[in-house]
Image (cartoon, rainbow, N blue to C red; front, side, top):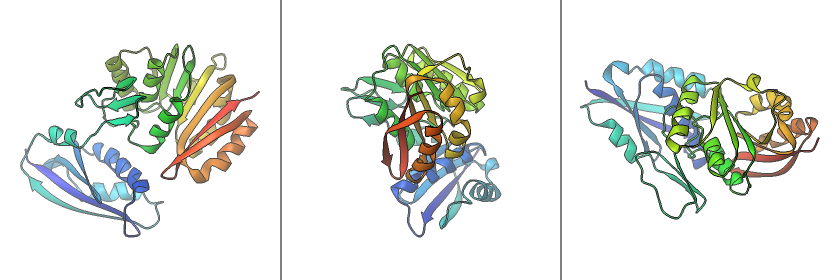
Length: 288
């Protein structure tokens, strides 16, 4: 079967900056649901590949309308061409680099080799799940965790995606690690990654409703969008032990004030925040 190559060009007011790269990531995730199975980044977007019988321009229009209607000034253009079938998985692997955090840890797909000089080697199978450390929010939390002592701690990863953060925590010595995600594919992918890394992490399919008031965590991570964080902050707070740490990400720098205000009403006090390409992470402490 021949394939269709779709060259997608993205721009906001005429250009595509590093802080706009999340658009490319979200676009790729959406295309997977339509049968696309390989991608290669370009300087102004990316190339996407799918079997000929999966291609439809209407699908591309639907993704733009449903996923990016709120992005002011976004310009999306594409061209398609029929090409002979290749080993597209191999082509995709060439364009999927590992992510290294100094000598602290390496997050890599199984087809990339381990590197020397890192304390924690984490293997993540990159499927449809969010959390391969390429996105700013995941990397911000990893950088925060690099300064934490997790030995003997209990950790919750809400919206765990691939499970990368809970897996890292387990390797850092956390004695109880739990990940929850409301996406079936993500939960299954996280379980696969837990097995690949040979760590003890419990993964559950669901949302904040799974949290039990009698169970408390020393470290609670939530890398989710702003509105879900605001809606569930009271539930999260009840699951954090007094003196425990809450790490939040999945939002922009401009969202910090409203999130801090909500956290304060739940007995959570901001300790510090960091940003990367306008994305933000907050570290808070439960004081009551």
